[in-house]
Picture 1 (tube, rainbow, N blue to C red):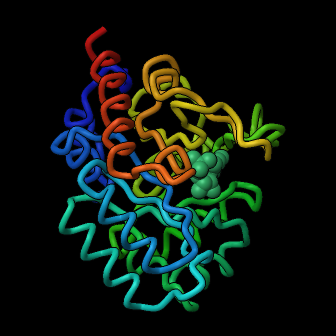
Picture 2 (picture 1 turned 90 degrees about the vertical axis):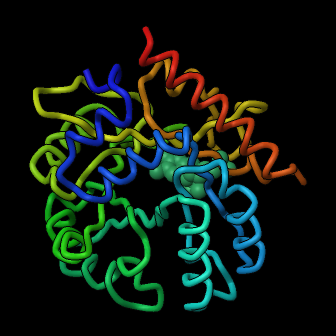
Length: 262
Ligand code: 5BU
């Protein structure tokens, strides 16, 4: 079902404003590429975001690795998001009880809810985590992904855990708009989840620390996922980030076009 529809058609199926706008953006920009900007200096992160900006639909951050983090970094990233037409996803992987994640999401140094369009959470604590994040995020029109699976070798997020995660997502569809997942699950009547997949690389298959990289076509065409998340494949080993981003954008988009045309 959903896997054969265009991103634009699917945007109409969402009530969450961020999910709607994100799917429209992907279609408008012809990009299903998210860059994982895992850099620990503010200037380097801003430079990378500006370079890859034209090719991406989503900038994925780990804001807590930035040594010289300040509010100006957030201001600059949100300005770049406007300039290049992308959204921001703080890959925070919340994993605590509802009351604690509310504080972690809305306050502290990072105030993630104030600037990150999308964030994510583990289901380990049970559905209270979604209730807590939703209380903060929904009034700000934010959206969330649940970690249904992970890309790393030996992950415990599988089987029944994944099935239960999908059930919780269905219950809170106004806020949980998709998953971090390695494949698309069976769509039920009324489902339209956005599947985002890390562990994507064109040139290498492993980093020797558990990460497993798959080809964009395998992720988008064979496995039916929607967004490819690429980090070191784009900026690692002194690579020309803009050139690589364009290459991944093309590979991801071609696989999507092939999927919806079949
Ligand atoms: P890489 O350099 O392309 O391997 O970066 C992958 C990014 O995706 C990195 O920021 C991870 O924290 C993130 N990630 C992942 O690799 N695997 C997962 O299952 C999840 C996130 Br969830």
